[in-house]
Length: 179
Ligand SMILES: NC(=O)c1ccc[n+]([C@@H]2O[C@H](COP(=O)([O-])OP(=O)(O)OC[C@H]3O[C@@H](n4cnc5c(N)ncnc54)[C@H](OP(=O)(O)O)[C@@H]3O)[C@@H](O)[C@H]2O)c1
Image 1 (cartoon, helix red, strand yellow):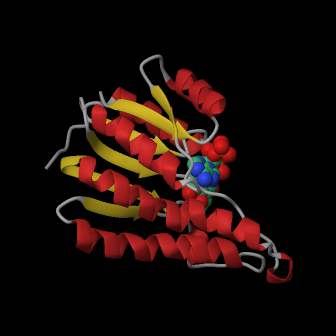
Image 2: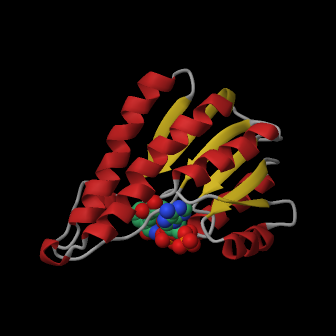
Image 3: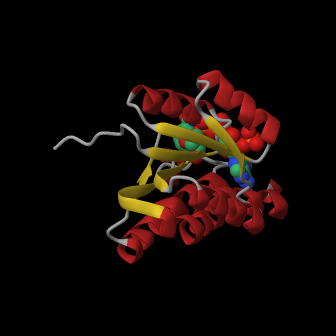
């Protein structure tokens, strides 16, 4: 079975990343309508423009629940949404003896709390056949010394998608693990 992305609305959170740009370019080629969401308005707008003139940019900070709610309100008043992807990550690497609580919380905001808040506010907007997609990473399964935060945050992604998938079905919820 083939699935066409033509005229599908896709929102990519963490829009300033290279993976987001590559994904957005592929989606455009497939005929999707793409919006990049990022916490820095100027950087996100520049990233959107670099991918293509039709790519929209909106503000969204995963550590700020009002920002997530406002972005969902914006998406809800547009054409709705077919697919939401979050590639966001905030790295807090280093030996456990050096880990800083604030950096850890920011990392969990990007990979665990933020995605759950995205599900809370965006799942009701997802059209039939749509999906939520989050990014994990190989560090969850093959941690190296200094990789406690990377392992914990990426591991959270893989477990939270399983729980969201059974709760939000038939909306699909998945994780990709690069690396
Ligand atoms: N690259 C790899 O080899 C690799 C390997 C394993 C897993 N992964 C996973 O793949 C994904 C993409 O990787 P990448 O290397 O392209 O990432 P990246 O270049 O580090 O970009 C991460 C993006 O997340 C955004 N972000 C961080 N905190 C945020 C927040 N609170 N709200 C909104 N956006 C936030 C950053 O925004 P700003 O632009 O504002 O900083 C940045 O645009 C990540 O989840 C990563 O863990 C990548």
